[in-house]
Length: 276
Image (tube, rainbow, N blue to C red; front, side, top):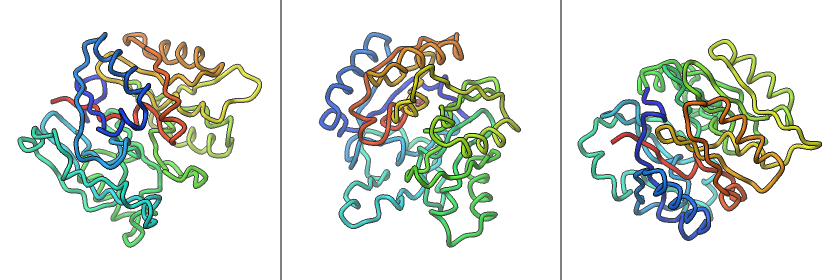
């Protein structure tokens, strides 16, 4: 399973410069300063390209899927559904092996963790015409690895695992401060994850955690560069410090990201990082 630290190219939706102009400008500056190759995806219908673009499993292999999430099924929201097969500026995919996964899925619900993938159980809800065993079988065949399922907190309508954890390498994962919002789910997540990984949890020394502090876990890593959302709250510096301590081999940089966070996602959500 190709890890983020082997990715060297970042794609962004053509929508991002219009929807989040300050964030886009800041990302451009950081990418140029650190020599990161970035490109723009054409023919997209929203900024969240992580959710609809194919998932890279190795240098020449991608897994595509049906992007038709239940939160975009109301008629007035369907215009935001991107057909990944019509996205432009990805000619290199023609030379790659692309596996077609016959399941409804969001890329944000796929966190690659070494030789495993972590997802929430929302994938079962999105494919309720199939048994859980069949869904799991199709996932494992497509991704060629073990799938670890976390319970879905239905208060979080997207059900994305990339809002819960990020892989650090060496069988370690970093988990968001879920316990500040729901201690029951926090304990459920830990109980499952600790069977497979060494788990480190983000913690903040504040009187009350900000409702957006979940977003730090949704950082973007490309190679050894890690871009952490900054939210203009007291937790900003604490998040940067903890992520830097967890990834001492990386350059950790803060990027103001409230424009995206207020729309429901952060830096991992608005990017598609791959190895060409």
